[in-house]
Image (cartoon, rainbow, N blue to C red; front, top):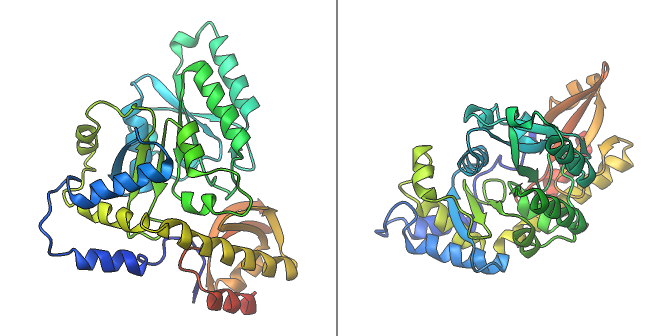
Length: 341
């Protein structure tokens, strides 16, 4: 069976596993107060060109999104998201569970359009009944988006300026950030993200780690006593070393970026094969997620040999499906998939 369902269907990069094994019997302080967490924080600050950054390690993406949003918002405040945003459709109401409403705006190719965002905020602030409405105080975006598309630098700049105008925080979900940063079609760097965003996270779970996400607050704006708030959410890992060691390894000699390139290279090979075989793309994506439209009968045929993701119905007889490559995808797997297709 060939696995193209997601980018977290294998364990961790061998160097990460080796480092975990090599340090296994070291006696270290808990809760992130160890030498490896401190070393990882230093490396990430340098990579972001943001020496004032406050960095915390959490275990998974949904946990990170919920905690960051919940701790930065008051009870009556909400977060703006693209209608197709991950927190809006694929997190089982995790944000709403904490009492915060997700405020939808239309999306284009998975992205929030600055003009739409500005129109939404203008409408809200011109509404005389707004005191009875949930207040928008944060904008959530993901990079890549839920459809594997990327924000351009000028788009991030425009969104950041709108957020500044209305005193909103800009939060970027970076679950697949490595793949965005090494895409051949991006003009956005990690330093750019740190400049434009008030908070973002660097995804490890989908980019070479067993688990783990690094939350980066860029403007001395981490919630007061954030570690206590993490613990209240049941998310403060006693063996914080497990996250620190992984990120310390991933940010040594640019490993995070080097292994991310493999996913992009394999995705480009996959895209070429799909085009040669005449498959119809739902939309063009420059990262490691490829979306194509298949007939329902074709899906049944492929399911016998390939695991991929259902995405959404296209019409009564066709479905949008997703094929995903990762840091661990091999050329042999791409060749075998080509034979199946």
